[in-house]
Image (cartoon, rainbow, N blue to C red; front, side):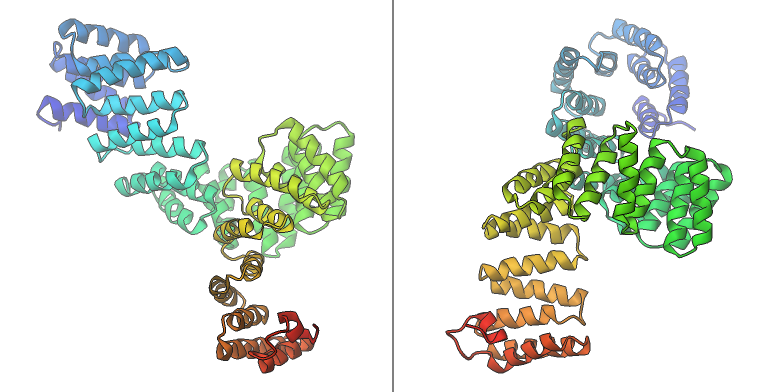
Length: 516
């Protein structure tokens, strides 16, 4: 059953095109042209369908036939722009000029807006590309292609948070489309937003069934959420079909190890080594990574140094060797390894961050800050890069400038005690005690049995002149420390509670420790 009017039939074909059902779209276009052989818009939509099916010569013939019937047919003129090369800058500029001319005649032409988005992307004009996709969405709000394109363009440019809005839009518009769910879930996985990722990937799994890509990414997300038993079930299902897929074997290995099922994990590891080969670059990096995860940095370093001595030239090998050296407090040697890695690719965010950490270990905070700035610019979502920038700025005496970095670290690693500790210290050193109190409450929610957060609340309350609250916080700190068997700290906090509001001329540490 097909729509009755020409407009409705063309829209039905373009709706199929939108979900990449190109073969069916072409079939409907062929039928439309058979019924209306002298209708230029029918020929134009078939040109589009043929183009999507990689039949460029046939598409060109349709365009010529349509324009012979109506030289001003916008649909045909748009289809003609599809056939202009998109790898050549001047060709993209020429295509854009023609699309702009067509939109001046028909401002709501969906295809022209969609094509402009792609041409702008090819020219590296990201904001214009996204704006064109948004215009296409306004013209046809139910279509998903413009949102998918915009999200992809933004993600490629490192603007992943902005891409999220488009992924959500496509997921809401296409709740029964498995690939849309897969794309949204994969996007959130890459952002580290695993709770959001699994919602989409679960739906994609139900819709797509047993397919490698969706199962792989779903299992990775389950692992990231600590749901290892479910991840093992998913990997095992994949391995029934793909017994030699090394990614699936190594994935299941990690979850088995996490659950302490060591005999099964060892079997998977042995199988993985058999698949990839003991001398492969994957194996040369995987075994050191396993040792690093176990905290065996010296053992990992021996393997990495052996691979490097054998002539292996690989960014990750140098980076991992630098990482191990830094953990062994051999920062000067770590610095050399990171320099070798950056010589291979100076656009690698995590190497800049690791290099900066080594420089901080060598008491070079200015150098550390420079590499932290580069790492943040390359990957704004790297929480360790923001941590490094904050620590370097504090060491340089720029604590006020460090606070935004620590705040970003907290935002990107919401469960990090270390991030909150650094932020609280920085805020208190600047006298920003009201803000420090809020952060202390966040810390206490994370580690309610620890005394440090309560003690810091006491310090800030006392600095703000709220003596009763200060005494209460110090007393809670003393109780927490006493319960943990930390009697010295408990006694200091007990004395702080007694002395809160007294001895105004003595410093805080003098009041706590009897000095000054």
